[in-house]
Image (cartoon, rainbow, N blue to C red; front, top):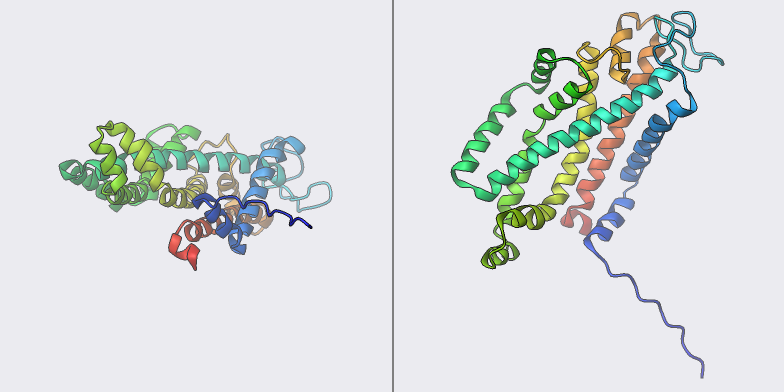
Length: 290
């Protein structure tokens, strides 16, 4: 009697696996992920493989791209490729760090407002609305100008002007989840408030927060580029925005010094937006089902 080959048991499907399957099945999202990974690897490994000081004068000013100077030099004679690689690392650090600052502020305010409700919710939402009506770029410019324009000041300033959207999303999720039966059961069992907020409700609010966090990285990069372009960042730290801002008066003579860092910003933000759009569809059960 011939025995049938037993079929190996299929791994249990979890929400995380279903979300990844939906994300991986989205060509645009995977393209964005691949693009962002390539840019991140180039930004991290580039200065190690091409150890040229981005502020060093390496050739005659405004030298066009050539075999010995792949991306040419700027109006001072600095290597554009060295600036692009070194500036990419700093730009990504600012974008990710500022996003962490933004999310920390927004989640804290939104969680407290959504969990407690009442007058606490009313006060925190009025504060949120106050910051929401202020022009974020103008507010960031004021904050950077008031304090020393260094890397930490830029990160904190960007974080302080973009948290309102995170706070509103977090508040909405906490208002929705706090009425769920499993939350009411924990309250009935006498679980401490801290545990309910951060270990029960917050993990269930993560899908929405992951999406908005991903999109905020691109927003932070654009804010940094705008501040650098206006000369409101540390001139001794190379970034893509600083490269564009310093060469803007010579754009017709040295188009490559502006085009390449500008293209790097566009591709990074594009990849980030494609990832965010893919996560929106993958983490939404209704969209994932379709």
